[in-house]
Image 1 (cartoon, helix red, strand yellow):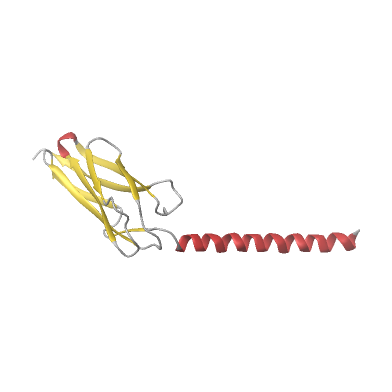
Image 2 (cartoon, rainbow, N blue to C red):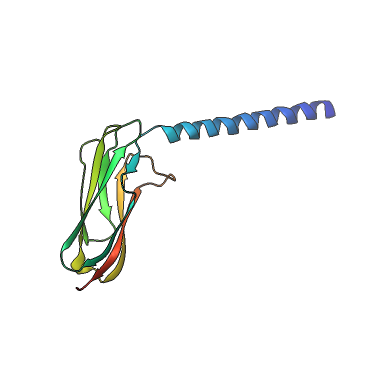
Amino acid sequence: MKKLFIPLICMLLVGSISTVTFAQDKTAKEQLTGPRFKFADGETHDFGVIKRGPVAMHTFEFTNVGTEPIIVMNVTPSCGCTNVEWSKAPVLPGQKGFIQLGLKTEEQHGVFHKEVYIQSNAVTPHGEKRYVLYIKGDAKDM
């Protein structure tokens, strides 16, 4: 019985190690392929202290640093106080695109933190379903 048990254990260990190695190789390959955002100035924009009233504009410029075109299907702000525009055509690898935001500051009172959700085919940093950009600031009557 011992003669069968030891070789069986060895075979199971070798099989599980090769499965883990294969899974790690697959994950590494997935991380290197596909469409990928790289935002020129990061994923957060701080407006700082801004005057309430006029629309505050900011454009997030990005480069597709991936191996496939990025297709942005939709961009949705976390509130109705932000208008959005974005690159509608596929952004090829190495090409640039944009997400433009217009924040209605008259609707802001003091410190604000907003999110903008990008629905696309791009690979997300931690496997999320959508990519998130952030805007923040402090809207004051001046």
